[in-house]
Image (tube, rainbow, N blue to C red; front, side):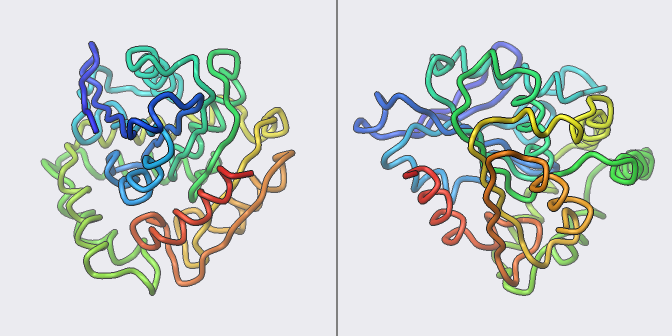
Length: 270
């Protein structure tokens, strides 16, 4: 395992054993809002026994520097490409794994930038679907943070409200720490990236995504529920399979790491 900062201060980690480092594919893990690359670590660390795994902190999140307050999906995608280049992984076959806002980012990359990298698979974990309602929610969240100096308020609420009945107290503590580790400016910048999703007409172009895709959803997810969200994405993709996890909410990997690992492993073997 090796971690680096690129020239823009973006933090990333490469996982892989000597047996996997020459593999012709790489699994790229992208986290959701108020999170970090370590959200994916329980799954990525196990997959790295046979695969090269790249974990990225989005700009303004966790350990990555915020260079631009008005972030967009285009900015985040460009950061991914630059890190792939710096890590000498850009020529490999790419499997994109994204949680929440990064599920939307992966769809954006597939639609607008599939010519830049060779995407052979997508794993969307509780992906965000851009709607006016979602944009309004995140715009209001930005407004609510105007006079805040930390995400303490969200950190004390979201670990309970956004998880399922199966979630352990240890996972809730991890979620709380992820949120407390963010700064307000970076969090708001990533909220703006989510809002920007409404500018790209993604829903009408889901059918352009040709790479094999798996969606993993929590049956108790109130953030990205089946109705009006997952069903719209799954119903528009050409080559998709959906797996539903009972008693699981929105922070799926931390709530059910073993189940996610098994599903992703099966997906990789196909």
